Length: 399
Image (cartoon, rainbow, N blue to C red; front, side, top):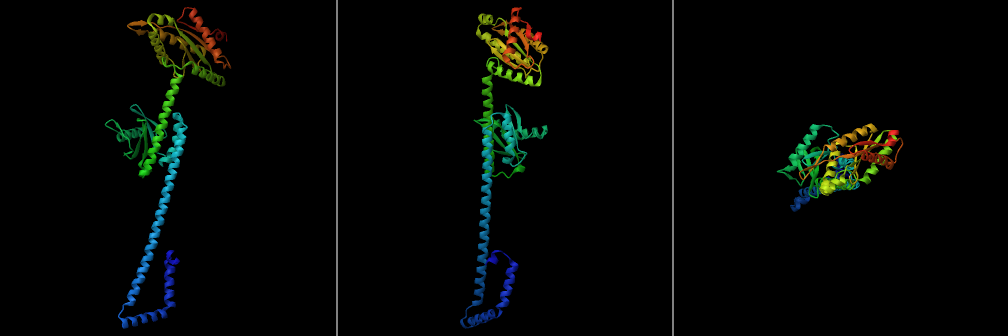
C-alpha cells in the first residue's frame, strides 16, 4: 500500500509481474478450482472477483485523490491566511508610522517607505486634492514626467468625479484602481494602483481602502495641526507672526548667521500718529490700517523675510543675508509704499506714514534683545527728527 501511495508505478508494475511469476501455479490452481465451482454451482465467480478487485482499486484511488485535494485546500488556506496576516501587519505598521507624523514631509517619507509593500508595486501613486487642483504626494516626482502626471489627473477626474459628485468606493478606470480618500466627509485625495499590481480581490481592496483611510486621516490631522500652529504663531489682524515666535526666529537666525558669517539686519517701524487715527476715526479704522499695513508688507518684502507685529502699531522685519545698506533700501521702499497707500474709511482717505529704525547684527552677536534695542533707538530718532523717515543705528554706523 505504501508503494501505491508513493505512486511509484515502475516499482509497482515490477512487483506485480514478480508476484504473478512467483504464484503462477497457485493462481492457476485457484482459477481451475473457481471454474469447477462455476460448472457445479452455476455461479460466475471469476467475473465477480474481477469486479470486486476493480472496485477496490477505484475506491483506493478516489481516497488518494480526495486526500490530495484536502491537502491542497489546507495549503491554500494556510497561504491565504499567511498573506492576510502579512497584509494586516503591514497595515498596522503603516498606521502606527502615520500616527507619529504631523507634517506633510514626514507623511511623504512614511508613504514612500510603506506604500510599495502595501500596494505590491513601486508604481503606486497619490494625488492630493487642493481646491480644483491636484498635487502629487508620491508617484510623479520620481518619474519627473509632466505628461504622466497629467494622465493620472485625467484618470482621477474620469474615475472619481461624476456630475460633480465625489466617489465613495474604489473604482477601476483607465488601467488603474483608484481609491478615494476622505476624512470627516472632506475629500483629501486619491490612492492609485496600476492594474499590473492585481488581482484586486475583495480582501485586498479592503486592505488598500483601509490604507487610504488611514492616510486621509493623517493628512487631515497634519493640515489641522498646521492651521492651529499657524494661527497660534500669527497675529490674526495683520497676518504677521506674533512677538514670541519672532523672538525665537531672530535668535535662531542670529546663530545661523554667526556660523555662516553672513549679515543679518533688522527693521523696526512704527505707524506715525496712530493714536490720532483711533481717536479721530475709531478703533475699527485703526484695525483697518493695521490690516492694510500687513498686506503691503507681504507684497513688498521677500517670503524669506520675517514679518512680525511686535506690539500695538510697532512692527519688526528680519532680513536674512542682508547688509546694512540693503536693509536701508528695503526700509525706504516700504516707507514709500505705506505713504502711497491711503486707507479708504467711510469715504475718507486716511494717509498712513511710518518711521523706521534699522540695525545690523554685529560680528558674533547672538543677542536678539541687543539687536532690537539698537533698531528701537534708531526708530525713536526717526520720530524725533520729523517722522516718515529712516534712521540707522548709531552703534552700527560706528561699526
